[in-house]
Each structure stands twice: as structure tokens, then as C-alpha cells.
Image (cartoon, rainbow, N blue to C red):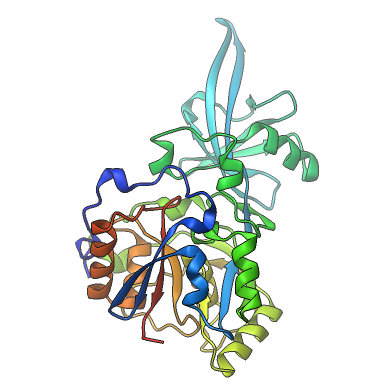
Length: 351
């Protein structure tokens, strides 16, 4: 299985840099087996049924991008350097791992100041990342970060424009709850309260799980033999209530449809023993063609990067030929791609 098997040409102008307004007005490509239908997200009520269960990732994206100044006093006098930081993950010792640019401009023990309230000291480096110890904790840290930080837009958007105040709204789901992600579960960005209410009124049920999406979700696959690729790990939790409800839906003949690849990866991680169990920890599950799905009966997901692990995941669900046809159709019909783009509902069998 080669990386080129998951490649395709994407016109640059199909990469969305802003979401549809309102959220649920984005386009939805429905794939029921080989049958493709062009629809709209707010018409999701036409495609799911009473008794189906949507699994939603309730992670909350933190404003993880920071810009600060490192001041240094030496025999040569006072010097300053502009430092850009992307927070990655909190550690047990109270530090945060972070991407720091330029890392060579900061020495261990030096401080980077991001605002009048927020600063951090570099305690060390490892594997090209820095470890930062902030001056604040808890709610005080959250408040200062909200003021000083910017939303961590994906590289393919950040290369086209800087994050702004609107992204604090756009790059967060309406049901975001548990803070810790540095990338959004983007399929869920299409849901607004009106759509959630309409789905609930028709008898669709919901389960919430938490997977803190990491910056590694954007890392490219660098090996030709995809089976030798090592996935990044992300923290997640599936609680006992979600397990009970998902099992009940399956037993009653309803479909379990995760919204987003993060929710899918998490529930399939929790079912690796053979049956779905309550689970908490770091998952580095890698889903590629040949994978046996134990929980998911479908998937709502945006359109993914060529040669990415997420292309491998959707190919595992639908089949490689089917995904090629789906993506060819999406490009021909000018669907908008990636995090702020349009969405798809992938149902492996006609239902």
C-alpha cells in the first residue's frame, strides 16, 4: 500500500479560508455506497433516521497561538527577539510542550512575555519542541490565554491569512466543552443549535466523547510504505454513559454515525478489545484499508488533504475506488475543501 494510492490533484482555489454562513448552509455530499447526492448540511434530517445516533467530539479548542518577546541583557546591551509559540500539550509537571519559532533565539531559563499578564519561561527542549512554564495557572491562565492567544488555524489557512477575532467563533463547535484541543473537530463546525434541535425532534440521538485534537493531525505522511507510518498520539475519553447508549442504539437497529474522524478514531479505539468499553488515555490508532470497523456505521466528515492519514481512513470505510469517485465528484462540483470547507456523509451501504 503506497502513499501515491491516496493522492489526488486539488485546485488551490477550492481550499476554504472562511466557513459557510450560517454554519449549516455548507454543502453536503452524501455517498450511499456508490450513489452520490449533492445536498446541504441543514438537510441532514433527510439522510439520518429516527433511532440513529450521532457521536460528537466535545473538545474545546484553546487559542494556542501566541506571539511574544524575549528580552535579553548582556555585555552587548539590551536585545529583544520576536517569538512565535504554538502550544501543543500540557504535561504532568505543569509545563506545556510547544512549537517555538525561532527556537534558537530562546535559551533555557529565559522568559517570553506575551502580554502584561502572561509570560512563560523555557525550562528545556526535546525533539525540536520547547517546554514552557507559564506564570499563571487554572482560570487565571485560561483568561490570560483567551486575551493574548489566537486560534491555531491549520497551516493551509494560516498560509493565506492570519487568524482574527472571527476565528474565535468560527473555529469552535457550538457544543465545545472540554478545553485542550489545538485543532478543531472540523466536521462538527457545521452544526448550529437549530440543526441539533431539528435532529433531536425527529428522533436522532447524540453521544458526546472527548478527543483533544493535536497539531500532529496536520503532519504529513513521509514514508512511501504507509504501513510503516507512526501516528501521533492524542488524549481521549469515552465514558460509560456513551458506551451504554451506543450499545443500545446498535441493539435497536439504529446506526452509529460519528461526526468527524476524531470521534470515529476514538470509538474504534475504545472497541479494539472486540466490544465497546469505557476508555480513557492516549490513542494512536491508525485506520487504513483493511481495518475492521466495530462501531461506526458511517461518517460525517469534511474533505481531506491528499496523501493524509485521513484519506486512508475514509478509504478504509468506503473502499479506495469509491473514495476516488467521491473526491472526483467533489472537485468537479467545486465543493470547498478542508477545515472551513464543505462536508460529506459517508454511508458504506445503502440504508
